[in-house]
Image (cartoon, rainbow, N blue to C red; front, side, top):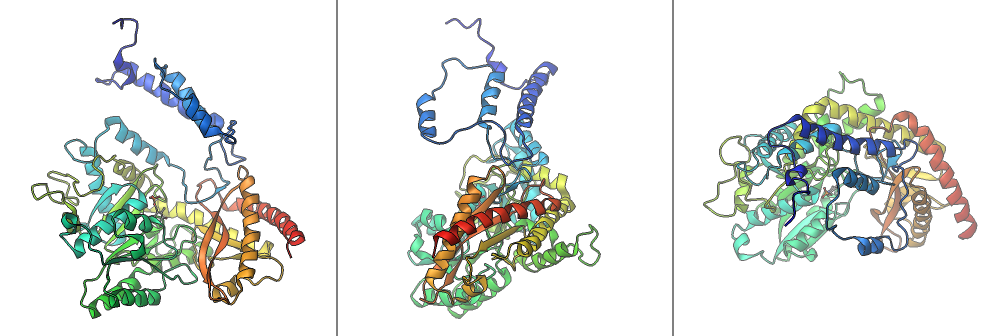
Length: 552
Ligand SMILES: *Cc1c(COP(=O)(O)O)cnc(C)c1O
């Protein structure tokens, strides 16, 4: 075998001894990437520069032409290829309003880099002590933020808000029947969430074998929060027919409209209903994947207003406080750091009020028990669904240290200020528009346009409209989606075909189609709003005129 003219295999790796030459090589590669991205940036649009035609048989062609090279390329050349992947990529400029898809912050990225530099496995502190330490710290920090007793609580980083909903359900099943992990899931278990909840629970009941027929969807109020009277009714129905409610997901920040379920009311109802039936209270998971971070405002003194928030922002913060202060009444919750925590994917924290709950999921008696809330001794996370875990906790730790409570408050206050300004100008300038989450003062504004003389949002939520009327309005809104979607390289809005399911004159349920303005980029400032609303007005006028001339 002739290897003498081949590079040393160590060339692909960081040095063993920390020598300058290797560090400079690495810094150059990193600089190449960062400079490369900077050169692609375009603050006047949404996407990075560069051509990328994704039409036709784009993915098919990729499949055809891709194979592993026999001989590897130099790392600079590989970087050049990597940068090509980014051509035309959506980027979080000031015009990015699509959804909760944040920019990764610098502290977040530095944390990820730190984790990569040692590549520890967060499964066990013997392999990944840095990740374990950061995980215990972050768990304690977030516990104290929401009002959990950090001596009792526990947590681990996992695969998204979805992973947290799933983990909560595993606990819920094991709490009801500690033998279930051995014997399988009993056939009479039921879970509850609102109609506005994320589909995470749907997938979880499927994956645990409970089956989605045992997922009960509770009606929402007009602010997209759970109707707890309907919860009570539906829990009673389940119990009357021999079912057992084991899990309630309270969405504390819905993905589109930011409706916030009242965890306190949900707990009261759940306790009352199950007590009457002689059952244990179900496990309540606050799906705070999106909204959990609003808890940074919980202790903000509105009258002192030390950060000088505007009256509009203060009003929003006051409303958020009222709901988020109940978060600690949930048995478990989630913080998607990859959403409002400003860290890169995947970084979500699953937090439980009582770390003993993890004991129900431990692998075996001889395993080290749930020591998630302590910084000493063995730390072996045998209760997670994953085996190997990335140390995303280091990125979370980095972001929490860099932003601090005040940094998050200032960032979110800017998002809120933009939202406030947007709402004000939108209704003032475009009479065809109704804001359909008027009571959820947060970073997302969901809006809907109406044909001339069509019944408006107020009537739609009352249930006094015909299917035909709502379908016509949905159609008009779909046209707007298409228009905004075609031009999403200018401004990138979101949309959904499933905002608020309303009743009709014919007594049928029907969802409303709506567009979404989600403030998520730190580069979007309140001054931009005039331009945004004028742009929307032009798009809406165009769609509207076409619609009126073609539809009767
Ligand atoms: C985003 C979101 C989820 C899913 O979280 P992932 O991190 O994408 O897995 C679940 N619930 C809510 C309310 C969300 O907003």
